[in-house]
Image (tube, rainbow, N blue to C red; front, side, top):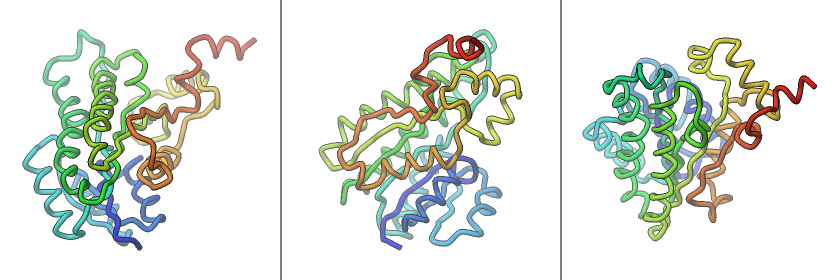
Length: 251
């Protein structure tokens, strides 16, 4: 193990949990953050060198307490992965303000709050912020008015972080997953929708949680020491192809 510590939000399941395991394999200490305390503690129980902290990243007081606990336990913060997020796919006319604010509170406010709280501690030795945006933040899509807008805002926030925190040695990048095989995706997408995505992806499949995690770990590592301010699509080529690919394949 090294002394390096990374905070991973939304770490109880999915991409966050897969990323946690990849960091551990690389010798990092991981502070696992999630608001679902039961699932978080169950996930952390079988792992070594982790610190589970129950925290709702949309609440400033909880974020401040979480960062203070990580510093008290580990003494440093070298990287922050803002992965916690929520999704609810509705048409514009069905997206009331309460739903809009719920999605923005976690997906955007949470990134801002955690980054702001961690930055002074990361500045002591430099470090990296990786914000998990989405391909939906790079291109518009059906039923994504709140979710897609929140992720587009995360991409711009990432660039602001890179511009302002670079002078104290903190890099900031965004990872934009395309369709990924997660429990959340299975819950919100029918098999027909998943097939429609697959038909439009050049690699002809959804990504895995591990494939997203590998990019996150890379961006936090010294191998990415000159990479900052970037929004990197990890999407099997989905964003690159535009429209028409499924019909072309049929021909």
